[in-house]
Length: 267
Length: 154
Ligand SMILES: Cc1cc2nc3c(=O)[nH]c(=O)nc-3n(C[C@H](O)[C@H](O)[C@H](O)COP(=O)(O)OP(=O)(O)OC[C@H]3O[C@@H](n4cnc5c(N)ncnc54)[C@H](O)[C@@H]3O)c2cc1C
Ligand code: FES
Ligand code: FES
Image (cartoon, rainbow over all chains, first blue to last red):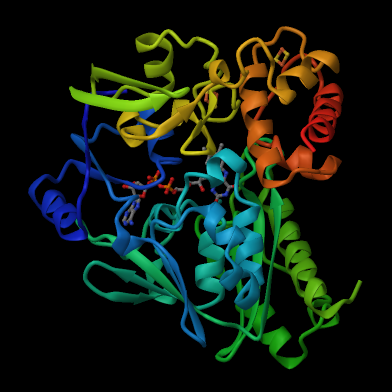
């Protein structure tokens, strides 16, 4: 690793001020993406500003028709939270599928979503549920937040503080994990929300995206049968040594059917 | 440089180290606790697993400042004097190791798993050890040892 300094921020305001003063500083949350990146010398920040203990960024709250989760909430906390398990079981299940126990004991929702790795899981829930991303300066709707591979609407110095997830009528996440890394080769988050059906896909493309054709089909009839014959186009999907674009397209179809089947009880 | 203070295996320690020091290197190089192994560069093998404030973590993927002030438990702190911890005893009895390189991390991960789930089934054990790789024993005896330890700890 290149040299850097480490500071634990005492407040969100302090973290913001530090970021504003030093453009080479980087936020550190769970470190489960950033530290491996630093170890590979793929980044050389001047300093790490640890925001993982800030009270303003922690905690899970039941707000009736939505669930609010702080950015520094760890995967293990989301997966075990009674509120999340009761209100949005698909989100608790998704969190329990991330990486491995040691990674879930440290990694955080804010770090994962800010990073927007195309194969990460949380972006599927944020986009699938139509959540609101809260930052140090504004609120951003999920539909406007993700901008493709590792890109988001976040501006320099902007800190994700939390998320507001509308409680869906029902939702499910199905993921085909890469057999070695555990990251999604394809993941499909299907949600029946007050604002209609939403289907968000991760793993398969250069960033999370909505599969609008599947949403339209499921709006007519929320069933596996409604997806019959609906093909995911492979154009634009990732094509690498792990899988061809055609294979990923097929996985997207299968994962979407599995997610729906887990809600309807169909085979 | 920063002054790092933490409690490791029940003892208070304090050292001045570079901010970029990884917790795994701090334990091994500053404290001489070389039971915590470093088996990869990619945060995938779990050989470096220790407990920080009661949670199993990969000590190669934390800078030491993140553990400043924490309670850290390493493989060296698990036994009670000459009496092995039930998970250590079970690994020994069930032949859950060959070269032993992965074993400290496995044992720390298993003791974390059993805290959360005192009677895991095969599937839960496999998922619980998702973050630990063994390159020689094969996992059969490791799974056996976890079950053995679970019974012993009842
Ligand atoms: C072995 C392994 C397996 C994994 N498997 C999976 C998997 O299956 N699925 C999956 O989804 N993920 C997986 N991950 C990644 C893991 O979920 C990370 O926790 C997550 O990607 C990043 O969260 P973090 O809190 O660790 O962020 P960090 O590593 O601390 O930060 C990541 C990036 O986000 C920035 N950042 C952090 N917090 C904020 C904030 N509040 N506001 C703005 N920017 C911020 C940081 O500056 C950094 O650039 C895996 C990781 C490992 C090591
Ligand atoms: S040394 Fe491999 S995960 Fe830490
Ligand atoms: S016993 Fe050799 S790597 Fe596990």
